Length: 96
Image 1 (cartoon, rainbow, N blue to C red):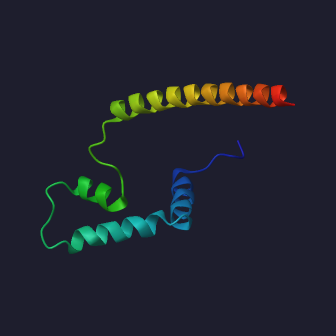
Image 2 (cartoon, rainbow, N blue to C red):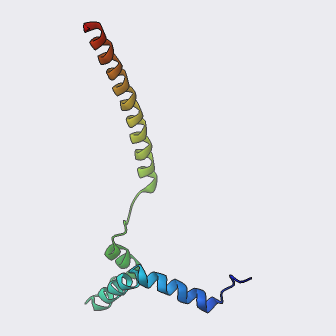
Image 3 (cartoon, one colour):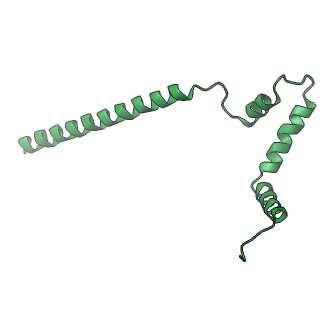
């Protein structure tokens, strides 16, 4: 059990990780911005998400469907491209 850490040491390790990666500074800036806001927004969490650049009001299911359709289109275009490349090779061979 040499890997056992006390909860306090785990918290301190995590805090150092957040500090090193810049998370604490970024969150502090957002919270200061919220504090300095002349009129408090009705939903602080939405304010923080918007300030941090998180998408809001995104229809995930619609994006998933669009992604599947685009994947299908890419597959079809690759097949068409391969077919055209084959035709070109055959035409070049016929000319030789």
